[in-house]
Amino acid sequence: MRPYAVLFDHVLTRLDPERAHRLTVQALRLAQAVPGGHLALRTLFGTPRPLGRGHAPVHALGHEHPTPFGLAAGFDKDAEVPLGLLDLGFGHVEVGTVTAKPQPGNPRPRSFRLLADRALVNRMGFNNHGAAAAAKRLALVRRTERGQRAVIGVNIGKTKATLLADAAEDYRFSARTLAPYASYLAINVSSPNTPGLRDLQSTDALRPILAAVLEEAGAVGSRLGREVPVLVKIAPDLHDEDVCAVAALARDLGLAGVIATNTTIDRPRDLRTARHRIERIGAGGLSGPVLAHRSREVLAILREQLPEEMTIISCGGVVTAEDVQERLDAGADLVQGYTSLIYEGPAWPGRIGRALGRGRRGRRA
Image (cartoon, rainbow, N blue to C red):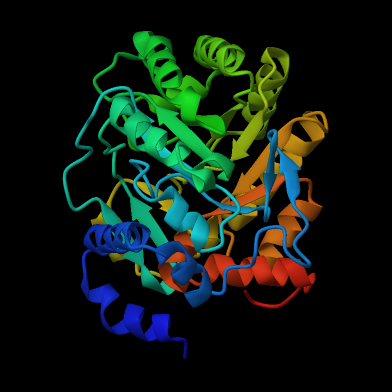
């Protein structure tokens, strides 16, 4: 049994998930603060050397990614440890979700493990310190040589207190504030934990939001002399025809791509966790392996609908290097994971990176 599995089974499962997460972030912050800490992380977790032997870079969104596997938004909400997470072996890190204004999120408890399904349910509610605070942290990161090379996407969402009618201006402010430090911007209109947010996935509501963010990203890009790609992140719960409609809108407006998918509000009957516990947990977004089937379906639809030059980031239910390779073979340009980091531990992205580099398929990462 791997050491992390022992730690998880006997220690971390006794902690509230949000508390365990906070301790992990604090440990990464400490590692970043210690001289040589990033090298220690890379050595400890066997992180593949960037662009080293067997690890040809992946070109996407105007950047070279040392591996196509990255970390989805939700882990580093306030851009506290993006470089530490890259040192674990992710090819890119998407920080956030960041909102225009600081907000505490939903009442606790708001994060729950479904151990039998190796899944999570969360209703965090975009708890974060706001766009200005995240921009300040990212500015410090970008002043370093490592930070300038790092591929760090920024996921932005609507402030809960902002009316849906004013959503475009809310997203515009976040885009203007964060685009100077973002490798790309991801527009989150698909979290189930902000009231009414998913209504913004309708093309009529979505168009002004995408247009506002594209305008700000374009202005920042012109000033800095580089592009700031813009993507939209969609829910797995959209009907197929709605996925096609969003794809058409993204194509027509000139977005860089689509991220698919976010968490689901569905509670499949084949979950192993007892139904009474699921009902007791209540509302929230479900993530983990149970999401894989629908995520693959949405990927197939998007690849059929979008031109080859538009980037698709596939997210949802990824556990192994074989899962990652399967998404790449199905047309994804990049792949993201998150939930399995909780269950597999900090060596997980490095194992996937090494397995992808060796080109071995069918082996559990």
